[in-house]
Length: 417
Ligand SMILES: C[S@@+](CC[C@H](N)C(=O)[O-])C[C@H]1O[C@@H](n2cnc3c(N)ncnc32)[C@H](O)[C@@H]1O
Image 1 (cartoon, rainbow, N blue to C red):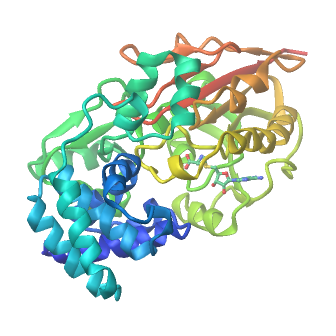
Image 2 (cartoon, rainbow, N blue to C red):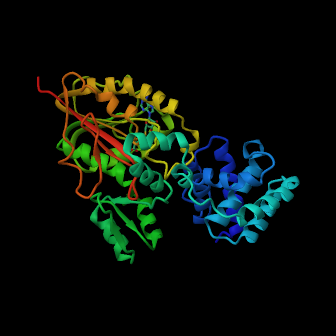
Image 3 (cartoon, protein in one colour):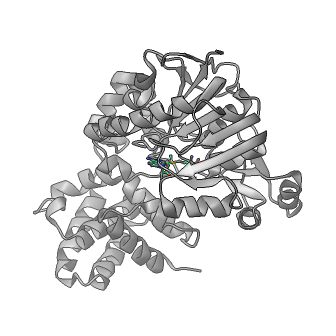
């Protein structure tokens, strides 16, 4: 078992790589220990609050320090304030760590700053964005769009770890996990989603063997709605399919004549191919899909987006995103939507989903509804118990939630000829 100092060293190394532009979720593979995972995601989630706590004790502002030193200060502050490690223990550990990172000249500064910051009193009434460690612009945007209460709940939800939810490929797999003594818990609103509080290794063994699929409940729900609304029959295409969570569930929930999964990214498409057994996988650009027009009963466009519904699992996005990036994401989505609409046959369905909760990337694309299409009422297919709101284009928005990522969903049906 990894010691706390191994976890600290590994976490610091990964945090430095995230500063350099890497994605934490890709670095935190299944091998990362819970201690490394908690530190990396925790520091990224609480970065603004940690920086605020450190700032009064720094002679030079954090952005002007070496990445190694900045990372060690944040990690020490996180351990002392949020992991409950006693201040002197966290400080001594970080002094050792900064030396290990070959920044021995900073040991005195790290020692002095952390001792004082960890002994300092927390601010009495921080504003919501500082309290929940989100950028001010995002808090202002969300509170203007959803109201202050909902925006604060969404920020709070992004600060909690996401448990691994799965769906089972068959009853045998579920019985095997339960038979091994794991207490499975069903999801409060997503049918077919399960998690285990204990004996996770049993569940993970099923995941490795293909008997269970890890997928956020929100993502599961999009796939279910797409399959159920289209009756689970006919020809279906998933235009931005990799890594394939939604395609796999759509396949399971229908008896399709054809199911094509496409993605532009070669490496991701290869992974998708392995996952789906190689059939029906194409490398293609969703703005120019090499597919017959007006020929598909279901077209799913799960578009690349800003990801503002997934900050719980991708906390570094908060610090990288800008309002301009959201507009740029919407600009990239527009030609994909145009191409997707052309594929849908009369009475067929376009399901457009993003894991963004921003209007520009969602309802703004469907106001007014594209010629020949009308929005499908989602009220009848969304599960009871799910808290959602209708968008101005007749879609559904689910804000980041204690029980799943935030996302937005629109379904449009083509008129019969
Ligand atoms: C939100 S992810 C899809 C997740 C996937 N539907 C799932 O549930 O596993 C968006 C995907 O779009 C792909 N993508 C980005 N630009 C694309 C384009 N122009 N054409 C097709 N795929 C694209 C990315 O490679 C990425 O895999």
